[in-house]
Length: 99
Image (cartoon, rainbow, N blue to C red; front, top):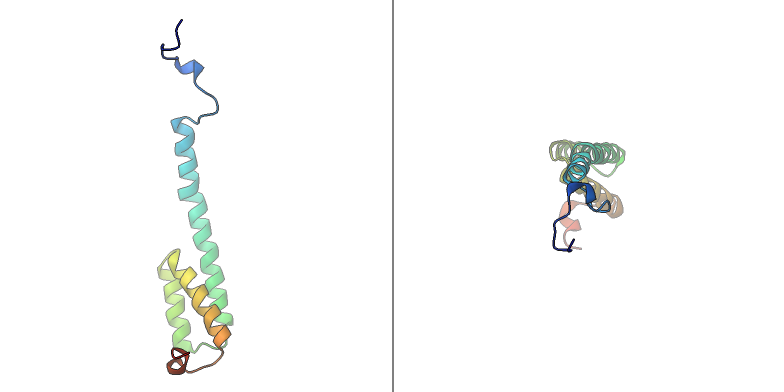
């Protein structure tokens, strides 16, 4: 037999994943990992907003809505904004942007 003959399905390379394995990995990532990541980020953002003493009630409400309405990007933005407000302390917003 020459090497130009196509191999049968039984002689497939075991190191290369077949289509079902690739689809299973995609299912795992999309339906298990991403929602779990979104849930963890959201809980972390909500707890951080509630513990941040430098925010007034309106800012906390807006940040909580952002964290709950935007699945992945919202909690990331809330975490960034809360960390930034903790570093700056209780400074007026008009003065903070001039720094």
